[in-house]
Length: 298
Image (cartoon, rainbow, N blue to C red; front, side, top):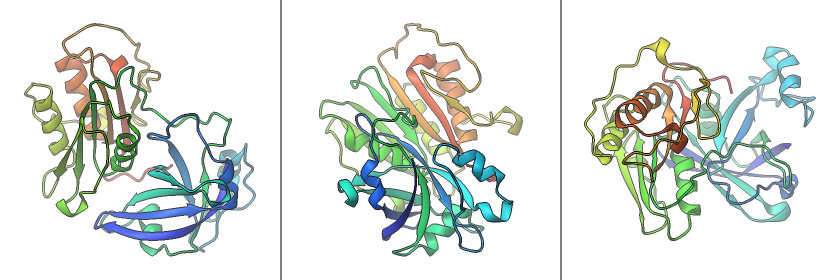
């Protein structure tokens, strides 16, 4: 559904994160079947005049958006629902927005200036209507591997906090600095390993930790710009590159891996895990959430 929401609370979590609670009476209709896990939503930010785009139909919002003059559109970005608070007309969607160093993108700029009452448009699931946007779907919860950078932290945190008590696994989370470490409550059998990046290249810390965790040795590969797939999205149910799913047993056959973050880093990690270590792509979800130095459209 497409709905206008207002910020009911704004909190600077850390140097790299702003948390906003978004509310509207119409969010009483929000809902998914089962846990939200890594549920993606779209946020539509105001244009430079501070106005939200007008005339967007619920079923045709994307086409209507593209039909608007560019200076009237505002910007669209994809985020994960960090948490759902309240019920009925008091339902609020909690979203953690990464704020990058200047120059700021539309999401970062909005979050840094946001205050109670700031407005957005949200595209999110309606009860009883399938929207998609949840990729975390393991066959088993006995051996999980979650890997991501700051863009994936809200999804990893939401997944871990909704896991049943018997879940087992490890989450590697690379964040810009130690001050960005958060408190995440999850099952005793799921370990959260924080990897402050400091001055290291994006993705290096999570790459090294993940490969070592699987008992292998593989340096961060050099990935050329033309090797990074636009819209990298490889899950057990979908392949953006058209790969076929094969079910091949190997030493890590009980593992389910969910990996998201900067596209080059994810591409390099995918190459090592699938080609070198031998994970079958039916066991993994690899998602490029952003691209360093490139503005994402939506």
